[in-house]
Image 1: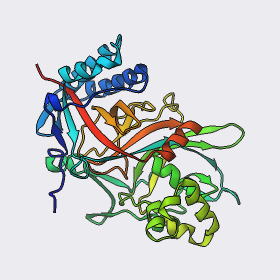
Image 2: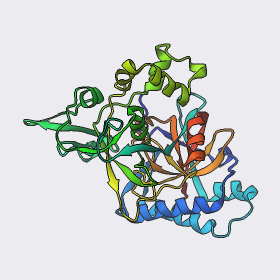
Image 3: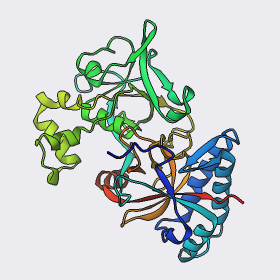
Image 4: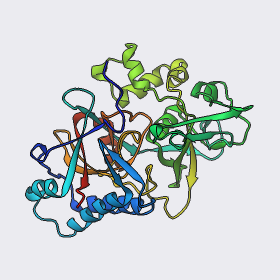
Length: 366
């Protein structure tokens, strides 16, 4: 059995001859926008805060310097065919160990859905979305032991103990949160709520052109489990025909099974409505606006927040910025690409499932 991957073993530094042929298939303006957002994040951190890449340690000051260098480089970039030598000369390059000897990484995508909802319950809109309960407690384990940096648990107090928070089944089937005034809005389909919870943020379509931004505001700490993968594993939907339409079609045709199937995913996400001037933007785990096509989500226990990355999926070769995380994005072999919102974003996100390679870059120390 292979040893567990840690933040010290998740990345391997490459010798200059082993650097990939860096290319970029997207506009440079979007990359510069994403770089400036990470620069703002690093500048908000203590200058000496450490960030680990393989066996090397960098500071927030170092990573801010990387993003500043990149932003300046992109002000008047040379032809992209010369990027490979420019980046290999300026940056130390690290590759993810992935999930096998070939360093394979699986790439998926996420977007911001808009679900039909109402602020008052009625016969059609009767499935609640909940705000964060006041008794939900989040614990950053890294505060207790640096070995657990990036790891978190959630629960609630019971006497002198912290115990696990109720599951999706407890909340949706046994109504453990009912009657506490925690209902944020009401949806007409529980599958829509699950979709919004998986994506992490999105919009409520309240009818007559009114949209409200909802943002992630914590989860019950339970492990994420894919309902779709469960349907495949149990033979309810063949793997070769599985997609979102097939998933929704199965739920619609089996209404008596629907809630029990959704309960397979014990994780439950809570939301808040955002009516601020920042409501137009999606935010990731470093609290900066995400850039469609440039921001990625990875496992924060393994990879440095905010850092510059490069991906190669065969169909995409581009620079990315590590600005988010996701409940299903765990380990050194998973990356989720933020697609934005709208029809094209949904189409991209629901169809991307590619294998490839993942690299991180940090400007070399002088």
